[in-house]
Image (cartoon, rainbow, N blue to C red; front, side, top):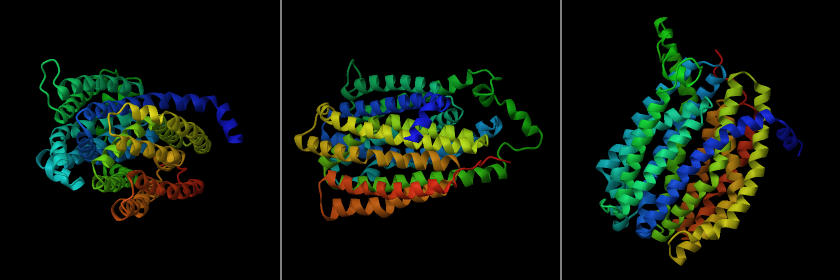
Length: 466
C-alpha cells in the first residue's frame, strides 16, 4: 500500500506513463478490433473458414514476433539514446532494424506466395481447411515487407515519445481495411465476391496505405526540433564526413549484443506458440475456431495492459539512458503495482462480459461453450501473464538484461507449454479449454523466476554509455 501511495503522489510519473500508454493502447485496440471485425466477417463463411484463416495467420504471427523482437531490441537502444539525445545513433538503430526486418520478411513471403498449401499442411491435415487457408496466405504474404518497414519506424518513433502520429495512421488504415473487407469478402457494390482471399487483399491494400502515409507524414516534419525532423532529415550526416561510418563495427556489435537475444527470444517463443497451433489444428475445426476466436478476444482485452508495458519500456529506457538509475528503479516498482491492480480489475470485467462477447459470434453451441471456458481460463491467468510481460518486455529489456528475458520466455514455452499441449491435446485428448489451461502453467513458472531476476537488479544499467 505504501508503494501505491508513492506512485499516486508522483504526478510526473503518471503523466509521462499515460501520455505514452493511451495512444499505444488505442493503436493496439484499433488493430485488435480490426482482427475482431475480420473474424466476424469471415465467420459468416463458416467455421472452416475461421479455422483456416486462423491457422494461415500463424505464419504472420511468427513473422510479427520476429518483427516484435527486432523492434523491441531496437527500441531498447533507441530509448536510451533518446535519453542522451543522440539522434545520429537513433538513425543507426533504424537502419539496422530495416535491414534485418525487411530481409527477414522474405523468409515468410516466399513460402507464403509460392508454397501456401505446403505451409498450411504443416498446421492441419484437413484438405478443405488447407485449400481455404492457402488462398488467403498466398495474398496476405505480399504485405509482410511493408509491415516490416512500418513497424520499424513506429518502434523508433515510440522510443522518442512520438506516439500520436502512428495512431492516426493506423485509424486511416483500419478504415480502408474494414471497408474493403465488406466489399471484397461478400462482393458488394459490383466488387468480386472473393471470400477469404478478399479479406487478404483488403489487408494488403490497407498496409500499402499505411506505409505510404507514414513515410509521407514523417518526411513533412521540419528539421530543428531535436525530434522527428532532425531524425528524418539527416541533420547529423556531417558526422560521416569526420570519418565515422554510418554503421561501424562498434555500433553493430552493441546492436547485436542488445538486440540479438530479443530477436531470438521472440522468434523462438513464436515458434513454440505455433506448436500449440499444430496441436489445436489436430483437435478439429471446432477446437481451432474456438481458440482463434478466444485469441481475438484476448487481443482486445489486453491492449491497455500491453500499452502500459510499452510505455514502461520507453520511460525506463529514457531514464536509464540519462543515468537516472534511482528514478528508474522507483518507476519500475510503480509499474509493478499498477499492473497488478489494474489486471485484477481487467480479469473481473472479462468474466462479466464473456457471455455478451460470445453472443456476437455466429458459431455452434459446442464452439460457444469452448469459447466460454477458454475465456474463463484466460481471465484467471490474466494478472500473472501480464506481470510476466512487464518483467520481460519492459523492465529486464529496458536495461539490456535480454539474455535473462530470453531464458525465461523460451524455457517456459519449450520446457513446459509445449509438453503440456502435446500431453493434453494429443495423448489424453482433453477438451481444448483443458489443454489451454495446461499450457498456461508456464506463466506460473515465469513469474517466479522473473521476480527473482528483477530483484537482482542486473537490468538497472545504462547500456549506451560511452
